Image 1 (cartoon, rainbow, N blue to C red):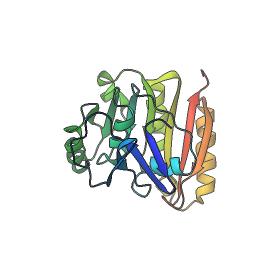
Image 2 (cartoon, rainbow, N blue to C red):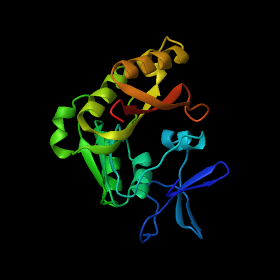
Image 3 (cartoon, rainbow, N blue to C red):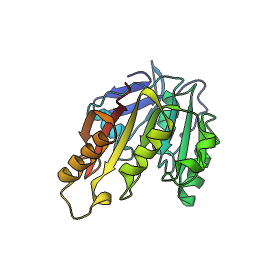
Image 4 (spheres, helix red, strand yellow):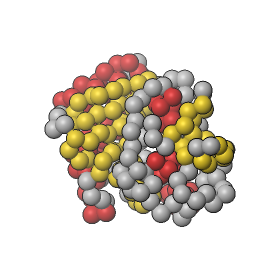
Length: 217
């Protein structure tokens, strides 16, 4: 995968351009023949976990990405390494997390922080054009509806979207396997092809990832 280095159980993104000499959130910095590398911890980033578990991911350097549930910016910062000539629209609704996210944004000019509720895409639609990738990591009961609403609004044709499903947030009493089956059915009913799915244990318990595309692809 372009921009990503894997060394056994360790994962890194290659720092684009000139390295300023500091980590963004306390991650380990490694210098190698491939350049300056930032360690990507799969226990802190579900996307890193998914890559280590074999998901196929190809993000171009000029990709435009909508990230829903950006949190403090850990995963966002690594996507920033990959899409260094593109833009990442980072939507977050927690004021506490947003403060930390903004600190990272000050060091990266391709991340655009958006303080908004991802369940209301119409509230930030004027900031965003159609994007090449949507990535969602939101722990809410209606997380699939939020994902579909944003894909319908912003995802380009022939592009992909990634949904991180936290089973216990959807139904704390249900077996995660049953929750994943319902999620898959809901996505298909709304017109999305499931390209790939992965359980993220042991990195993220009771989490699964879905990679989808629209039927237009």
